[in-house]
Length: 122
Image 1 (spheres, rainbow, N blue to C red):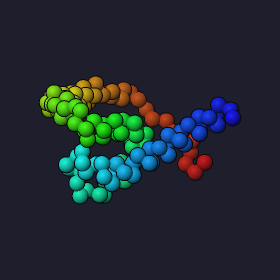
Image 2 (image 1 turned 45 degrees about the horizontal axis):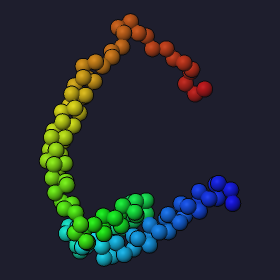
Image 3 (image 1 turned 180 degrees about the vertical axis):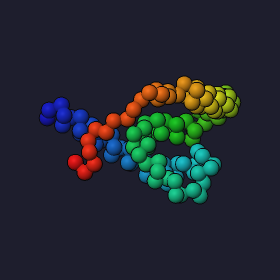
Image 4 (image 1 turned 30 degrees about the horizontal axis):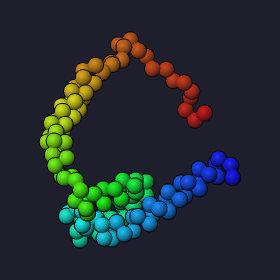
């Protein structure tokens, strides 16, 4: 087996394990760890590609939340408070970028004469 076949076999195994993790997680696990996901079945297939890629993290977080080994909600309070500041900063940056872009817009020289490159129909 050469290295290319080994890499392909690794990613196939990774995806297979991810699919095996995604099925029980999306059927049983997501309802237990996220209250907003209860009875919301339409968006769950959209999570499958992400779970296929990061299934070790999904399993680890699922286990942590089920075993109550960490106060996971308290970890994100500081980050969530910063979201408002980040939103205001991004909105300000967008407005400043538009204003600067419009004020630095180039104008055509007054003596510029357009030239026809080829005749019509050729």
